[in-house]
Amino acid sequence: MNTVVLKFGGTSVADNIKLNVVAEKVINLKEKAKNVVVVVSAQGKTTNQLIKEAQELSAIPEEREMDMLLSTGEQITASKLSILLNRMGYPTISLTGWQAGIMTNSIHASAKVEQICTDRIEKELEKGKIVVVTGFQGIDKQQDITTLGRGGSDTTAVALQVALNADKCYIFSDVDGIYSADPNMITVAKRLDEISFDEMQEVADSRC
Image (cartoon, rainbow, N blue to C red; front, side, top):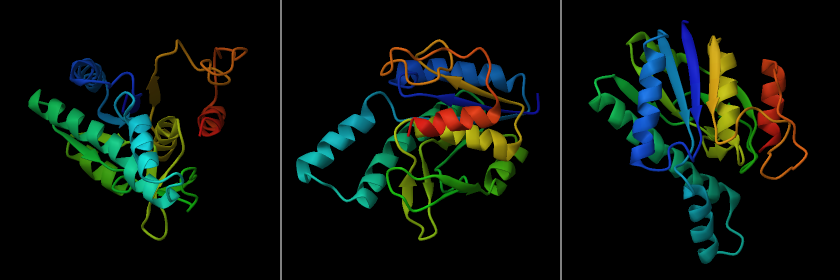
């Protein structure tokens, strides 16, 4: 394989012990693929905690400021994983959504990806580095941070897979496959045996 995209959700990266498990999986894929791009969510319940803290300050926080706040969760995960992989001998760099070239519309808290300029990612891959990208976020035309809504890290991973023309996109989750809806919320959700890239994009977007 030439390029693969991996996505790890909040449960998978919940603490430093689990980050070590994730690092081993990333290294295993790096041995098989020339280029590896990793998309991460915030650790554990970080996003929920940040929302709670904001609502303690204001009953209705401004959506732009919430995007500024919530985007920090993924940044923490990305930098910690990058620190770990570098220590393990695998050159790695973490990039925020905007550093990774993810451009969105200006609908805060529920933005849609409009285009991705992959120049920075490709430049780092050419150096032989693993690239860790913060999921769930991008930047709009006003240079404001935007978030893609809950579950937006899946959207980030799928969008990067398409933009980079990657061979594979692996989404590591706490469920046993891809479902037609969130099985934790929709009891009649069905596990899908196969799915196209376009359908996966639609499923990911529907979770936002």
